[in-house]
Image: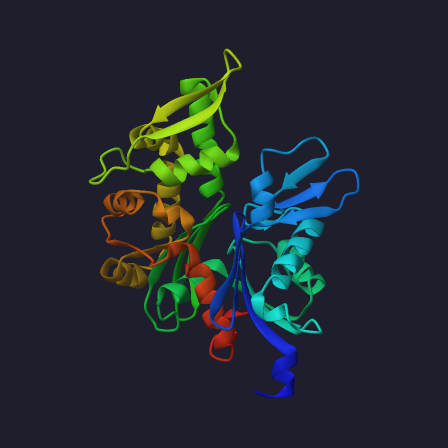
Length: 341
């Protein structure tokens, strides 16, 4: 290892709407919620990541919690830059150094991103200490993370359901042949659950509680083979104003998510209809690959399989598939140079 290697460190970042993950030395060293807590009076950031998530929905008027990314892109430039800087500082390998290392970063971005949004990601990374910044499209990173050989002349369909966007892409020969990016993903599912609880049970719940319902009893179909146990939900009664508890089942949540899942299915069918026939034949043989936190929704793979008449495979550890692929692209930067912008 040369002197230059000591001063330059490579990191791969999956800058997600819901979670930010960082890989350093082939290991996921940071996995934190993309949330920042700010003191309104001084405008200073007081917490980032897990600490800020603990405050989310429980703050008083002097503290606000914000999510710097919306729909997969940067919505608050200063907060995202600060969040990135703090999360990079928390990497265990950087804490004992006298000098901050020079950073080479590969960051994944949604496929439907505009040039202005790309510029914002690049600027944020440079302000957070990056000397070299490369961008890779999320569906490509997910495909590499799943273990697909993206360079071969064979079509593969990837569906990456994140927090802010669902990315659907057909990849072949190291490029995206057809893609569809929709802003229906994990956050919309969470909002659907909160709305359902308000309308059906007169129970007002926060975003964190809705997220916990989604994780514990979230489902895309109402006939699961091994259903989860009913889940107690606490919130505020809209009629009396008192705190109350309601027990919900996975069947109710499947009904709550129905409209959003139908829109995801429509987008998948649209992406398939835009696929050239030779690649469609490949997809028929290889099936569809799913990644991202949203792909863990119970029964979603089965439902997409029934809709498309194709086998559907969920990636191993789908939450980390994108950052794994970003890390592999970083490690083999010469081999995947054609993918990086």
